[in-house]
Length: 243
Image 1 (cartoon, rainbow, N blue to C red):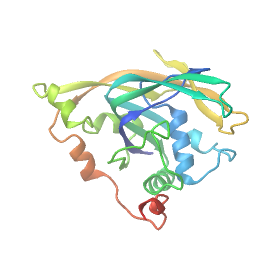
Image 2 (image 1 turned 30 degrees about the horizontal axis):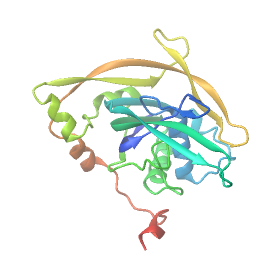
Image 3 (image 1 turned 90 degrees about the vertical axis):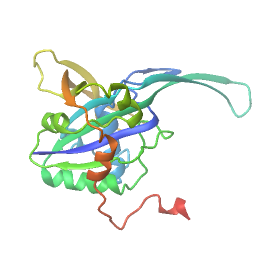
């Protein structure tokens, strides 16, 4: 098994796991359902198509820059102006995450190429949140999910890293899949069974949180840029927007 690493960074991103009526919240880190949805979009699958193969991935996140929660207050009216709607939507501002996907080498190669040249545009949780570059960091061959998340250099922005420039290392939280019943684990309902908008279904997964010390270097995102995959393919979903 190997691990494909992604870098989720943007001015804002949002990872809904619990939303109630007019309130749309965000988790403090990317959810597995969102990443599976991203893979499905990159592969060109519609919401009604099966995703059983994608739900089998091992998934984990390292919180490199936690960001802060901001709230967007929105109002809207019906077409006839008689009904008003109010909603609150939460976002994470200035957050950076290292995301790991563990699967077979053959699957990861397919996922990597799809994410580099997606069939549908990709977003970090909502359509208003396109990712910044580098996005795909590449496959770490022979490394398990947790090993890859532990070994990768710190991906925080240069501005954020300056706050810790006198330290030799920083403690980063890792949130990863774990077998059911493992000590200190908990369950989270964010494994999609179906993305069909007429009947969305989600199952649970077992998750564990722990901290890991990562050496502080001056490389940061520059290292990510140097190691990001740039292999080209013929398909480009956004080419029409550049004309």
